[in-house]
Length: 158
Ligand SMILES: CC(C)(COP(=O)(O)OP(=O)(O)OC[C@H]1O[C@@H](n2cnc3c(N)ncnc32)[C@H](O)[C@@H]1OP(=O)(O)O)[C@@H](O)C(=O)NCCC(=O)NCCS
Image 1 (tube, rainbow, N blue to C red):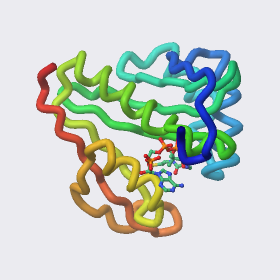
Image 2: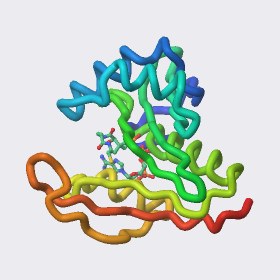
Image 3: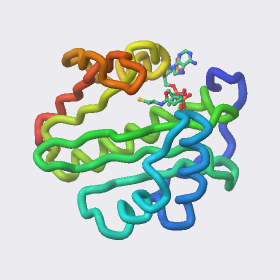
Image 4: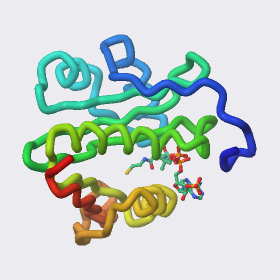
């Protein structure tokens, strides 16, 4: 059972491919009001050897996305969203865990991300996974909101 009170049906986490670009682009615009852009997303998938992007599919429908970079020996989560109707099913946590599993295979030492100080739900999720607040980045966002730099120490070993 999850926060929505529903049993999970069919959840798949898979690598993002070119067929997912328009989904990610459109949902980023809806959720964040901006996107990396379709061209950047294409390039990330086709050419960027550091990028690791994943999609969560629920009952055969795209529901969530995470983008990360392995900047060895460290790694960074660039973006994450779960579309509204699929929140509370554990998808956010599953996608971050997928990135952590990739990091562990690559012996990554530290996984970081930035999150708005006002984004209490995301901060709670990251803390539940084991991230700690590293520092505050003042006026990090375009509306001058501060970011928390959150850090997960993976130790660089499997
Ligand atoms: C933040 C976000 C990714 C969480 O995704 P989600 O799939 O709903 O989160 P999960 O179901 O995996 O929740 C994991 C944990 O996070 C916390 N949490 C997440 N959303 C919460 C909410 N609305 N209320 C209370 N706790 C919440 C809980 O501790 C939860 O564990 P629990 O269900 O055992 O209590 C999602 O709300 C989202 O996409 N928000 C908009 C975009 C965004 O903020 N992205 C992050 C940018 S850094």
